[in-house]
Image 1 (cartoon, rainbow, N blue to C red):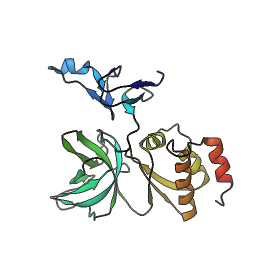
Image 2: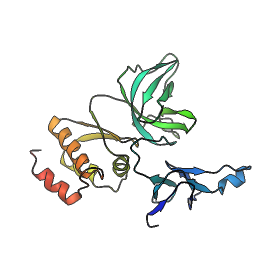
Image 3: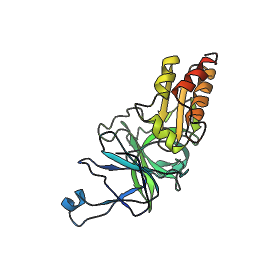
Image 4: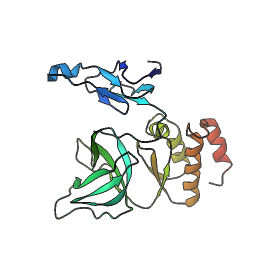
Length: 236
């Protein structure tokens, strides 16, 4: 399907047996569960309609700079304070998110992570509703294993556009595989426009940051050929 522009209230052809809706889309409620499977999906904001390769996930790519949480999306957040048995987390959305102390692999009331204000976490949005603050979990929804979620120690976090973060999460995008072929690196990408990178040398971290900024559609928007030319000029 060619990219198409949608407007708020416009119905979109989002259908799949395991349909997942991202930012900018809403499935209208139905009286019965059977009707819910075929309930129409409408756009809640203007932008470009996108879907995954198998059409199971759909979303609207707009020019919004503020992240709107959506269930199952991965995010990078900063612990801003305690909240009962959990924490408040800044994920760049209109409202802070909550993270329960038991929302980690193997966590119990006596054995919970020790997170401090300023700690970075890589989490999954487990609940997102316009009238409620989002909730986070640090494990995979199906396996309940950490699978990379949890506290991010050391490393460096940079801010990019929401569109760039989606590009980096696409397995077919060239940038992270290209950088990984040049030097060892670890990376975590949040749908909220935050990218965490960890390398063995500061110059490698600087190279990654500069490349992401250059490829970002909100920045230079350069292609793979020009990134290779840029890297060839660096002492890495």
